[in-house]
Image (cartoon, rainbow, N blue to C red; front, side, top):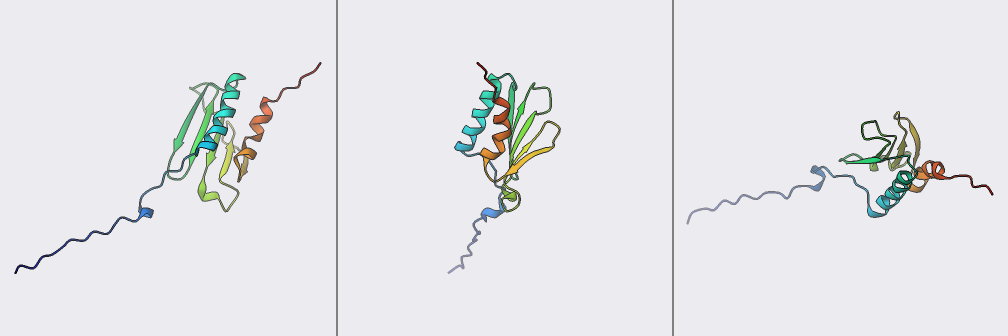
Amino acid sequence: MASETSNVSNFPNKKSFPVQVGFDRKEMDRILNIYGRMVAAGHWRDYAMDMGKDAAIFAAFRRASERPQMRIEKRPANRNKQGIWTLHGEHGQILKRGHDLAGILAPLERRLMKLVTD
């Protein structure tokens, strides 16, 4: 009787694969809601998204050929630090950080408010 050798392979560990960070449906709804209102107000014309293993980024542009006027970043690694959400301005400065998306979008909401007089 011939001896049979079997090759057993271990199942790959999930941690060895890069995990992609993304926006869930509620987050995208909020971001695209503010984006649509900014487009309607004439502030923005284009957007881009980048979803990598470290962060998910939504960038809004005044014109497609320029640098983004605003960037919203979601970095889960910063969960225990200053929050996973960051709002960056046109020149890369950090405008706001926090743990909830609503607080990060507040400065953009203020730009849309107009004073109505009688």
